[in-house]
Length: 393
Image (tube, rainbow, N blue to C red; front, side, top):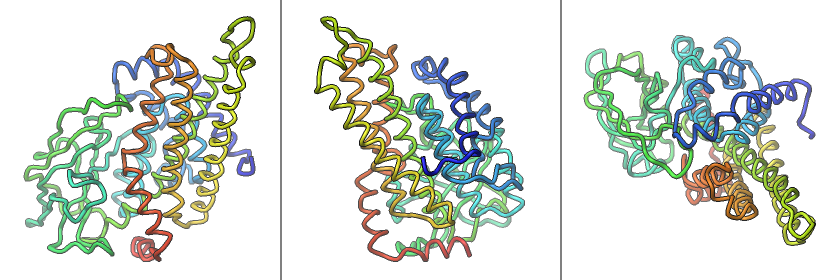
């Protein structure tokens, strides 16, 4: 591939070996038990798979986004849930922390996070919808040397295991829908009085990713736990979300490739009347040709977008395309794999239907694809560079 280098090949091989030796032997059982992959998370941190794109000053590898996507692809082939837990931690929460945090905040929170020693969660989404911030109800008020936060969040990933929650709350009377001013972000550590967690949601897919509500009831945090500028920190969320959406392309790619590989092996081994299914039926070979075509289209989109990101540019529209295309390709390949396996495809112990369930959540979690299509048009039709300049300044 045009984007491969010796260094990137090395990191991909580290991730591939980790998946083959440590992830695959336990992933199906963990999915069935809906167990959070804590030990695998820690191990990924030890191997440097979490902190690839973060500065060496804060414990990262100082690497690039192409390498990050290669790792994401490999992890998603073996256990998409593990990658979702890492993505919510490193791309969303960690991305906002890296963009907005002071040097002191980064040393305290980001350094252990990129090593997998501590876990982050981004607490932003509310019942009004993750993009409809004008109707968010969470508020933060300064009282002396403390911020007092009240409100609630839903569908937050990594609850219960997170050491620190990065929380969005309204701090100004007015919210500007264009500049996104009016909201601030806060660092809230686990165990803070007034921070309460709800029950884990029993979801279709991503079993064990610990998704659920977070409540703030007169939750007091020190004044210095304000993350970024007052009233003006949510622009960073749009940029860290850009990185997350781009990574979703690699998540979809990993799921699609795993489904393709498993289905191809099965149809070549499954004998009927002296021939394998693959040899006997042209319609089956056509299915694989279509899957392969979509996989390669997704690969080209994802890694070309990562290459743009590595120049320092935020490809706001292309990143959202990565997620929508990642979802569609993963669903196509997972659905075809289940169909090709037939009755065995819907048996949980076979390990195929899990990819279909996990692929389906890509179309909703973190932003429904319908909303992302609207954003693709918005970012292509309007000059949104002010968001980047606003955050970088």
